Each structure stands twice: as structure tokens, then as C-alpha cells.
Image (cartoon, rainbow, N blue to C red; front, side, top):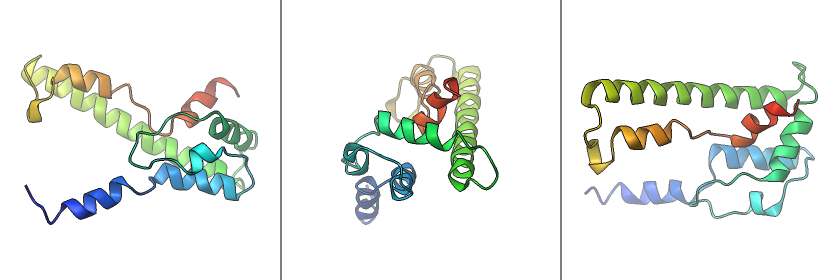
Length: 132
């Protein structure tokens, strides 16, 4: 109920995310990335893209300190890991405090939080780990 806030929220919703910017950087650095990953509906949830996974796999073939894209990938994984740990701790705390009662904002509480703990930011950076 704060109409003056909506324009900023809507602008963010319709703008590329941090990961979208990183994917564009991969492309600018010479990695073949599908147009579908570069020119997508920014307001839609990100969907895994095979060309992005292939680009990250090529980046990760050189894990040296001089490989800035590798360093960026590892920094993104560190952010994703911290978010996953936060979400897990929140899930366990809510389960301990309210059990399976409805959560705030009308959510399913622990049931919804359990699903959220499975989400991975930067999914291709996680999936390539089984390939190298």
C-alpha cells in the first residue's frame, strides 16, 4: 500500500538480474551463449540454459587466479552458498518456533520454506561441478 514505491519495484522486476549481467559478460568475453539467455523476459524466473552451462564449464577448465571469470564464478557460488545457509537456518528456526502453522503473509510456513531451501541461485555454476 505504498504507491510511490511501486515504480522502483517494477523497474527492478523488468531489469536484468546480477546473473543476467554476468551471462552477458560471458558472451562479451567470447563464450557462445544462446540468444534466449541474453534476450529473455527479465520479469520471468531464470531457466537453466545449456549454452550458459557450457560456457561456465569452459571457464572452469582454468581455475587459476589469473582467470577472472573463474574468480567471478566462485564469488557467485559463495553468495549462493551464504543464501542457502541463511534459508536453511530460517527454515529450521521457523520449524522450531511455530511448527507447521501457517506462516506470515499467508504462506504455508514450514512447507513453503522447505521448498525454498532447494532453490539454487546461479544454477549452472552448481550443475557443472559434477562435470569437472
